[in-house]
Image: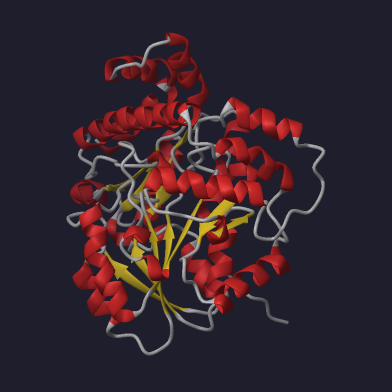
Length: 421
């Protein structure tokens, strides 16, 4: 008897490990799991409470009123006209990505290295041939048009799918508008379908996210959802934005696969999301505060790591660093550390600091990279303190709040640096 084998989610495994260690009384510093530290807006929480009696199945594509609000939200925030017909609501963006891959006959799936941990197993589960395009610290972990063109030219006539994620998990960096514009003609030249995972778009630290569909609308399918900007990961509600002229057969396949897998996103959560997708002063203030906290905190974490000899770029969105320990290769080798998994294992055993090895994201183990997620704090406490202040805080005010409410996490960062030295 044989069974299909696939890799479990390393991020979810680490989250469970951290919980088990904490329950056993061990001191742990949870830099391994990327769950938003904030809480959903009060009006969204209240709406979920009121919707608990909604036990009916929703339409496979999503509740019409919600899709209308999502379309208006993305039109307002991205400046790209979006209609409810272009929206699919699913039980998390992860299943929407998998279902989209399932809609293709065996194809070429191209991933930049690094990429989020689930893209590789999803492509394999869908029966596709997987390809990696390596990137470097010097190129900010971004693929270039020349790299993309050269790689796509080597592939045969099957469908070509690029999975792009920005602001990025695991690197916290994004693509600029000129960079996206430069990729577009290469994508068009090779007829590439792009699954553009923009789940962190609304937590771009400067509120300046640009969607690839602005430059390559004909074959870009965008995924987003509630988990990051609305801090509702466990609610499992994702959103997919389809091209205006998507082939009817493709759209029908997406909905057919959805109907045969998750049926619909949870109805109470869809109802609760309706006020969340109203782009008004409440939403703008809520998201703006998150962006401000993550921007100031990200810069603070960057300085601690860089001063400790770790190669890192200042983050631009989300809440991640792809830490590059290769500048410390000689001193690590003297301690018997030659790969990222050994580095992370020793670090955990000796300090309680949890990082996720870069190999989980498609990096070579000997590159000595690891993902650090800086969300081991209560975002609700900081957000409440900002609201109580009554006036918009400056960066110095946010630093004071971070020192107060993120002390455990900052302690973990200093333990990491001390261990390295």
